[in-house]
Length: 333
Image 1 (tube, helix red, strand yellow):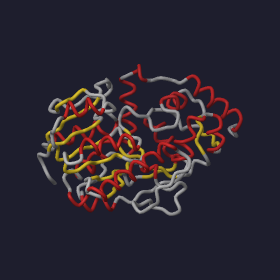
Image 2: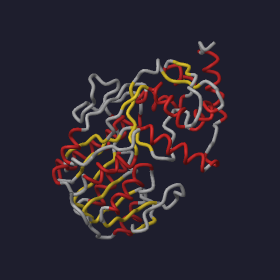
Image 3: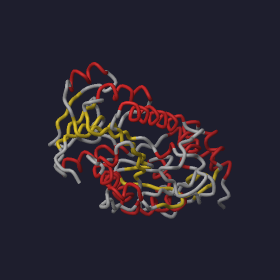
Image 4: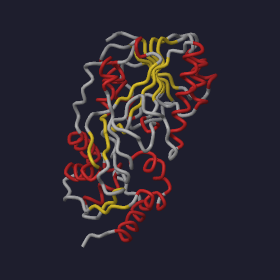
């Protein structure tokens, strides 16, 4: 592991970037965070330098950074090819390694084979977010081949922290379980899902900093723990001190038709079983071991929400949609 690197985070106060920032500082890296400074939910480590800039304003970014060079640049908020082209223009010749946070949702859906590996094709016809991430990868890898741009591609799957409820209905689902109302789970509830705590993800991400072997390559970073969706809901119910959930199974297509906002995340990701092979990243970062199983991570999240009741928001429109789906499809007696 290389210590004491100069590191720039673009973003830095999101679910995965906050944990990575804390670990980077703890390991002695010199961290600079560039973002708009608008997040009140998570904070930047005291030891980090903060540059308050709109990353979409290329001129402002150039003015803030000047000719500074970083050993490592990580962009957590690039979502389109235009975003990464701006990064290439800014950082070509000014960084030793550029890490792009892509998405494991870009992998083939439905997967032709499990486990999902880095060699799995990138093809998601259901979700534009995933296709845009794959298009970003294409631009970056072309820049690597043609001009030596030092890109490393990172593909996380569903990563959460204490502020995140990893259910489709978020806190609304927790409220329903605590009040004895049925919850809706897609399909028959047996598809497998992988959830990764942000502090575990950070171990692998930060462990790749400065690794010359990682340049020009891609890495999946997830937990090796996977559970059926029915079991995930049951685990949340236990964490919330609620009775065993009353689950109503509804076809994913039907759910997406009832709430179009679910279409991409559900049809393009959650409705497909995903088991990931993390051996590639572990080969370079052998101390990458996930130590926060969902049983503990969910309890941490529920405790955080119970301590922050202003975040216990029940979405009335979503609740009404769930009620409609339960009424139409319930076989509960």
